[in-house]
Image 1 (tube, helix red, strand yellow):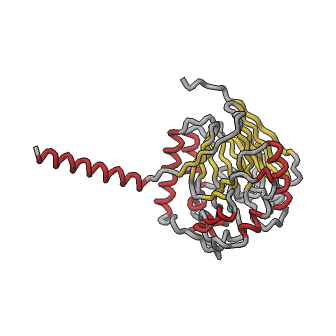
Image 2 (cartoon, rainbow, N blue to C red):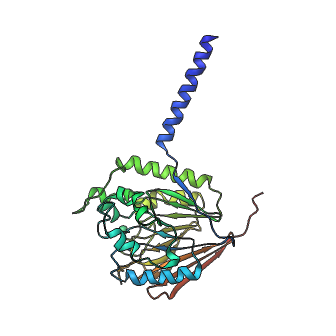
Image 3 (spheres, rainbow, N blue to C red):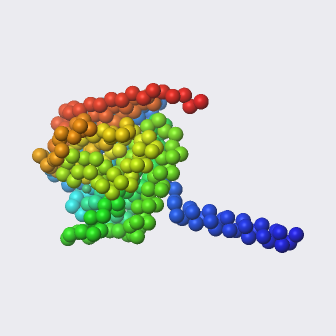
Length: 331
Ligand SMILES: [Zn+2]
């Protein structure tokens, strides 16, 4: 009898050990609940590649974001990374945080949460500082983490840390130094990230599934496609019916459809410096829209309808795209 109890206890301990080990292997992504207004519509702006102390028309784009933000009455802003040029933040007290963020996006409508991923330029500075809660004491809007989830009643947004996927930053960093703390060994980190994103997508019951990263999966701009994401992240997005992949990195605005799924690839990386004329493959049949100047994007979602709009530095509408989804009963 005593032996049985001992065996059972051993089994329980063993199961607990296995469970805690699997939790360590695949930690759940941190999740934030974002309430939306009573009219059951979600509205947000997307901007990327911006922090230049207002230069390269950053302030002009910010002004128009304030105007459109007010018009739409936005719930939050998504930043697709490369938040602080050229080399991220030096530390938690780096004045660039206020000079490129707090003092630039001053409009009342932009005083909402800013959900941000890290870009490759942010990795050239102190990434731990850029993700530190200490920054929220300076500006409470700021939330930047590696990979995390924002859930609203209408859409679920999955933010993915894409910089560690890109081989070149490890094999050929040129004169740059990247802050890989918490990211090496690289393979283990990216495998865990993919596993976490996949398990979160698998259990998601959101009407709209949106994945946000810094690097493009598909782009006709300067950097083009990111093969590491095409090979490893895209199949997961296709398997779990993701609606939109939103990114920055290429300093342009663009919309590209997927060949084999309803995914729309949306680049909004035009928050300051743009690369005019730097593009390839304009004949790509899946290319819906491309603009090589500065600007930003808005997203409006109801349970059944999506509207994506791109704006230039003057706030003029460049491109509008809508999609309607049949409403399926949850029964
Ligand atoms: Zn970048």
